[in-house]
Image 1 (cartoon, rainbow, N blue to C red):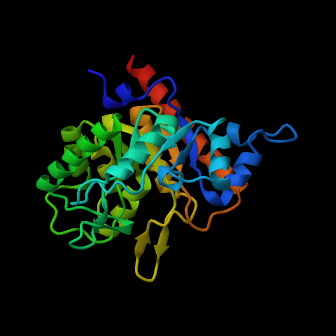
Image 2: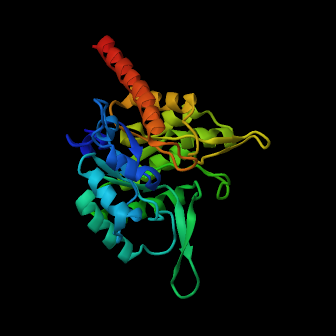
Image 3: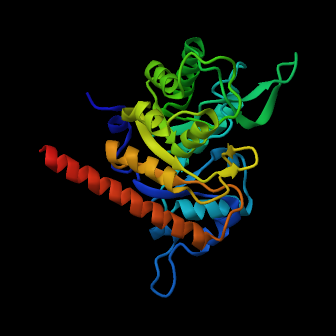
Length: 310
């Protein structure tokens, strides 16, 4: 039976390393699409861009125009911020209607969001409060089954598969019955959805909570991984605390975790994220190229291993 990744990925699915499209370099990305003086342009140096629909839904203006220009030349993968799949309040009908309209134009074979909650009830009037953070849910069987039901509803509303991203967090929501990987596995099996595996988040959590990141990555349902995220983090040495701020280049360990997964599962889209202390676009594209080299090395090792088995 084909894996979920085999069912979701199509001939149009980009593989290799892409870049999260940010407002700070959106204009530079558009103006450098074709390159100059024989040098490759933005459209050649990234396999895809990832965007959050919430940044463009019901919006016009310069940034929307710049995004549309980039999207004409570069494959787009969508990644949401505000679905709050782990929330307790009913989904917003207006939000899903707008998201569905956006994905009809710019959506791919799946849409992703986070294994978290990010809204709460604002009071007795039925309002919602956006928390502007990705907060963890209890790692229990009951929580996983409730979360899976929400994912199934989201997939039905969008009429496309979802992929869930594991998050970094700093305070568990009560005693845990399951590991991160066990929780994700149960949710995905119940909802029949995909995984967006953020290897930096696994690493940050491993340092803050004291588990082995290699063992945790290996325990994830890798047959359901449709995409990977790679990012940098900050180590607060005074407190020996790791912060997932996407404010630095990705560490060698995070690169290695990415390679570990790619060598195991094969070609997938791998995203480089940068959200803080964003350098010039040229520096980001150089980091994309280094990540692509490591990605290619992992695929080469996979090919050799497959040949040896044959």
